[in-house]
Image 1: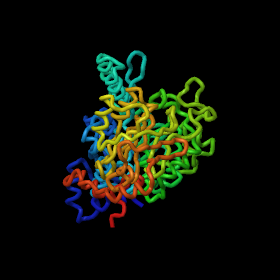
Image 2: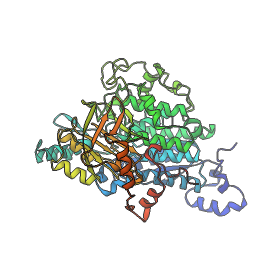
Image 3: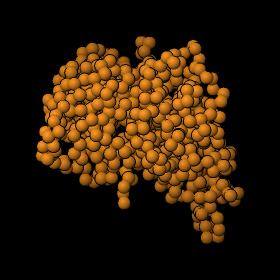
Length: 561
């Protein structure tokens, strides 16, 4: 069968003369109408360093597609910079942008009858947004990560954008000078690329590589290095071959592929946001996946990579140590990876890893030997209890105190919470509750990087808990629990908590509980009334109306009819 299975509807036959006339205007010649048309979803923008180098990659990819025998059709996709919008109302649009990105790629590719898509993205939501679209369309596809930023340096210390957030807390607590704060600000982000630790962008790029939608070792490359551009070219050639072989997303995104991604996320100490995103992708492709599956994988897979935010190193260090292929090979050898999963290369996972050493090099300590992990079990715990019957997500590693029971300090927004922390109104032993920040209640499920970084900066990271129906940045660590579901806006228990209530967070028992009787909670529920929506027009209003629970991936196309 012809490679232009989709696009021939607009390129073949007498009736399509007007269509071809339009295509001739953008560079098609007589011999091009039988070639597959490949959408090139270009996430370039100068909004954020994460995406500012992507246009160069897109141009390299465009040229490679032509050379491989396809006709590229480039179009733009949006991005929101989490780092810039963090702590503001604008952050409500971050998770929303995942759906906008998915919708835009689906609209462009399907509306224009494209045969395949090469998607290039950078900032956090670019990756899951693109993959959700890829899953919906089920046309041959490769995702290209725009690359990670190189670390900043100051006085012999590696810096990331999280360093700047934590410096704000340190300065507010009187621990550093204004001069030091300014220096951290100036040195944290030295150039192009997504945030450098194993935060959400690098977590998702790693997960997508593990699932087989990106080329091996492409997920940890630095944005500014030549190998990133070369990898983009190789991705274009791989995609054209996938078109010829009709390797489809439904063939790649199997239940086993998701288990591979979850195993890699646990091994590298990845972001809590990966739970949301993998649930959403699985929903789209029709693979049964629940929040409890993450807990099952966590119990089997240790954390054996020493990466920020709770470790020492950044993604470029991981790349030098062998990258995700080295991590996957170690998991494969331990029976914790499905080696028979097909990938976009046309080879299985095991075939892609055949030449990777069984053990990491002894001259590095980014990737530890499997028998000597940082933590014996994975870090992303699913906590349940009367505060989170549907579940909540927490990083269980890198914290000294495994449990805390303390008085609730209740805030109805992130801003109010941050003001209290910076004013030194939060004390050791407190459990902060930030609510009405969920998918519907925000809407948009803002990340709480500013408050959690301020807590760390104030030296309270091991003595103060924080729970929220919002999210956390991939750069967050400490005794914090997010994605609390059901959320406050739909009558979840977190919306019934009163100032001073005793709350227990127990990492070992996977427990999140308010120590109030069932009868008292039932009485409070009877008195509770749903708040008026924060927005009644525009994208946030539409999102709030459609979005599902965070425990279901916060998707907007679930149970529509």
